[in-house]
Figure 1 (cartoon, one colour):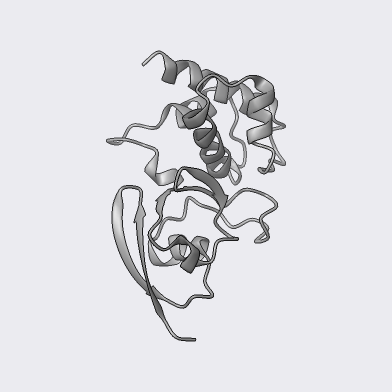
Figure 2 (spheres, rainbow, N blue to C red; figure 1 turned 120 degrees about the vertical axis):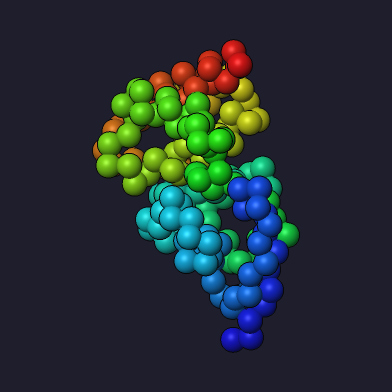
Length: 158
């Protein structure tokens, strides 16, 4: 397969990558850019572990062929902390016990960030709806919803 050149801005940094067009955004993030916070779960867009924000929308990076991401702005879990300080969502997930095994956590936080960017004061139902594409097998969802609401309060009071 003939290689293609892709231009991405990932977590504020511009990248030019030469790769084959049959690769996914997930594989490029993990293997080429070393951003392993984005997890591969099901590989079929069902679990949400691979969620990233692409051009202000949450997407399952396992379903995005790299050519579809050309010219895109991508935010991964690594891009949320600022100057070494965790994002309020990251802090709230820890403080509210919304993290157990941690495998789903990056995708949950990314989906929550995308929600709060569009709706800074969501209802519990809106949080649950925004997280519907993300599966957690450990925590249940109550602590996750509590963490998102706590982060929303913190963000809105900054």
